[in-house]
Image 1: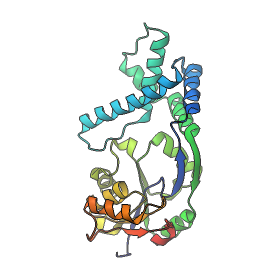
Image 2: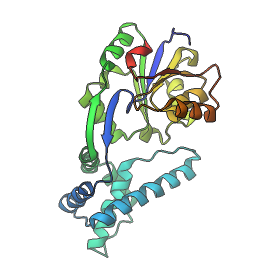
Image 3: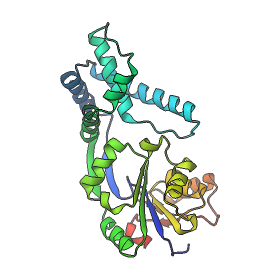
Length: 267
């Protein structure tokens, strides 16, 4: 692979930041049920709340995919929690009217719902740290006058705060978060839009990520080179299988595989 890249496009989770969340833990949904009751006068039984959350996520994703025609749609999580709040109010008051679209939109975009989403994220998260070598790598790229971009499958309401908390926010020339765009990797148009809006030459770009399907896959679809950081210790057999299934193996756009996930090796 040629090394004269002008623009480095990074994935976030599993690439720059090591994170782990557990949305299945019962205590999380107990906390969320209490939070809805105390702050929003919205009542749910704990077990039913998680079930309904998953149902609404699936409904909203299906609806968005149908509307946009995207194969890989990305919803805004604020919409899910807004629907839950209103449904929980109807449980208390059967005559509660949630048919006003303007009121729904105002609630969905309110600071209160934003704070609820962040509370959910941070309550489910038990690990969050920047990988070794990330700051050194980003500083080196910046010092060389190269562009640094973020292309993340994520929720803006979570990720903006996490980027700032991690001290990463100011390194990027532009940030593309999937919930903002309504699509996610490996949808070709997600990376395509980033390059178009920033007037980037694909031959001078490289994608860096830890997921073969999403990160390497979206780069391949756009004719962009890539690095695969094996931060989750995926076996050689699985890597070869996925590259073959994606049609990438043996092509001119085979990713550089960094077996130990050390980001410094992209330089």
